[in-house]
Length: 147
Image 1 (cartoon, rainbow, N blue to C red):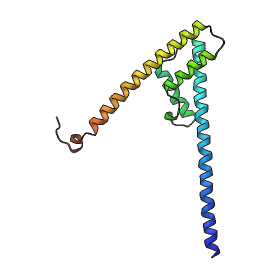
Image 2: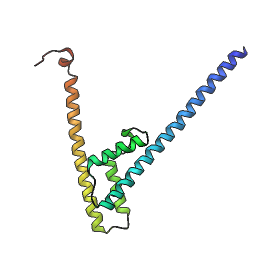
Image 3: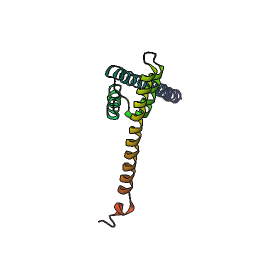
Image 4: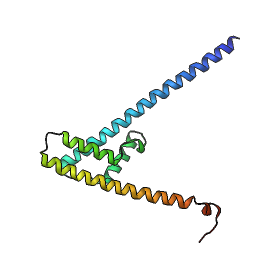
């Protein structure tokens, strides 16, 4: 009888420990995502202030990949280009080191970058969905109507 109670107690303890560990790991992962996004924003802000130009979409995406790898997180959990640009615009307007004309110029360039990203993203989504429909059509699945 005692071995049954010991077994059940051990099982309950194991379940509780695994739940607590998952909770802790999830919190730590979210913290790493937040730090990676913060580092990305700081890097881009420094790039804009030092170089005096706005980075392109591909540079931002490359930095996202680099930071996600260095912090061992999924790229999809990082901010996308649209969110990064929004945060950069906020940073530009919060700084007291730029004149209003400089803030306006930089924010307009960032908005143009955001529009470019949205066009690229929309085009990519259209191509992906068309490719998916073509690959998964019934005639392709069964080999009918091949041209």
